[in-house]
Length: 563
Image 1 (cartoon, one colour):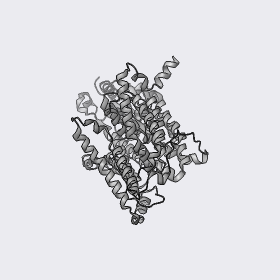
Image 2 (cartoon, rainbow, N blue to C red):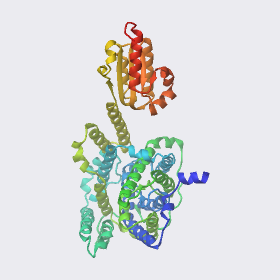
Image 3 (tube, rainbow, N blue to C red):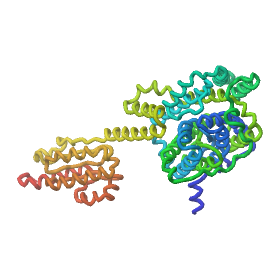
Image 4 (cartoon, rainbow, N blue to C red):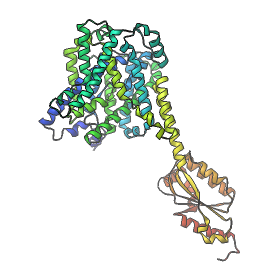
């Protein structure tokens, strides 16, 4: 029984995908894995360099994390690895605390991700508002594009600041070091990437459609590298800045650890974990829509956690699900997580065999590829569509976008979540309402003027809506108060406390309180809070019974009324 429970808690999708697995599916997965491996190579190096790390950090991450996420994940076709969403926060951590502390922060975020999955919190990630996700995604895209201006223009900047105004100042003060050759290489590479996408669309349905599967980023890198090498162009390359890429397997790295340092990494760790969870589950949902499947969000988070805990100790960086590579994997015919594992093995083979050749890749070409990725990453049309939404949505999206670009991603996510929570509280409290029951529907009350007051409550009686109960409490002007809670779907501790206060006030003012329709969750919290004991004798199943009791009570306090 214990083993059965354990397999339910931790069950990689690979186990289910292998049922009925055959040679045809293996061939499809191998072909898709080889294709995605080639696509991932330039992106992995570009993301690492943009994050302030050596290019091999991106390749190691794509190999190790990519293999573990496919092996242990909850999605059939998701590809894991370094992602553009992490560039800003990783660069900031490296600039402030160093690479050693990036290892610690990434490993701690892995622990958080695993615990989120273990405690079944995967579905909660979906509750993060779309405005927050779009705001920081577009903000990250702007910062990525801004960070690539240096290599795109070939500027001679020894150290690029991490903050927005610092970046602008560095670019402006070094604009005179503009490198014409680098700009030509970057423009040529960008034109090839953009043009190849359009060519691929035109080739669909023709005998040459297979050419569209060749990634434009690889074509741009090959042509840019050949042009730089053959013409001896004076542009910076991977080799000139970072030296040669090691062709061997990554080795275990153990950073210096101190609790004094860890306390500064709590918020960056939280941001890495939250960002990784959002990106991976968003990617998995996109994949589900393309293959008509449903992923296991909690298993996916646990796999992401394992990958992010292991990878940094082997020279890697934070990893998550990657939408572009996952879509490429699906379009290439992937049927199971085997394709993701093949993608990781492909990258490892390229690393072992062709690592020395990567030293000749011009950084201007990589910056052009990243500009293209960042532009496609942003959801720019959402800014145009803002006029269709309410003011709280607009403010939240723009605030998160502004804070991400100008200040810090961590601050932006925190502020966005707070703004979203406040908006949610406001919206729910506005949906909660009280309605006075018209006494004309009860002819018996005509004999008892000013004896009975009845209210129907709707919505959620929580801390944001207790003012409804307080308003009734402040206007007790009758001998009997009937409170119908049949349409109340939720009561929190603040709502229960407000009801307790109403009961005490009614006793002080000698008002008979009758509570109707208490059931489901409101009944449960009434039992747990002690509220039920206070109103046990005043409970009625519905409003009709409550009003009948109110009429009977009114007749008792008016002896002259006929019985």
